[in-house]
Length: 199
Ligand SMILES: [Zn+2]
Image 1 (cartoon, rainbow, N blue to C red):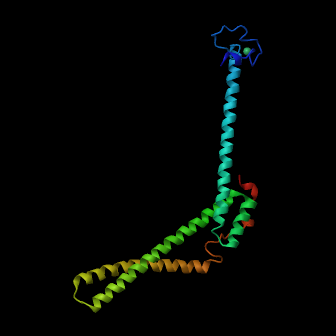
Image 2: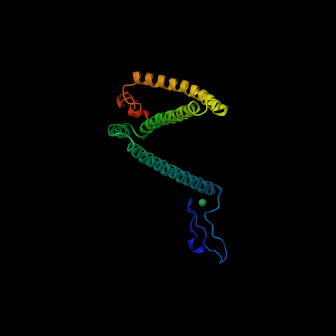
Image 3: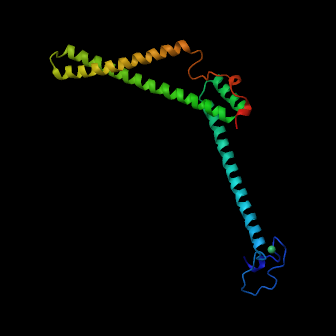
């Protein structure tokens, strides 16, 4: 603290201080009594707490803003009626419920993508198998290397066919079960918890 900024009284008890400072003396910030120092510590602690509360609040507001933006951006990836539904949920029930709906849709999409990849694999193996089999038949029935490869592929095909049967079975089940599209959220807002249930 510079001498020109030196307080002339204790900020707590108002006792005059720094009255006749010598040129090089360090100004006091309070009267020096234990009570006043304690009070000043308490005040600065409260100020620190208030600043940290403000920071947290600011951080939360930023997170909420980011989530709102994500909900709007995600809605752009949906068909119009589902987009409208998501935005309506966001508006009526808040960002938490909208975010949980996005998570559900993303999980569905991941599963659909995983199944598509497996189907692509099946197609590739079936294709390689039929070409290999064709070559073995057409060119050299005694080509053992080729026959071994065909056998290997046959095993793969069996594995994948078993898998495919499972997938097809599951898809058929889903077809029977499903009313709306699998990417559609099945519950309507009215079956959701009341607005008071969130945040
Ligand atoms: Zn004092």
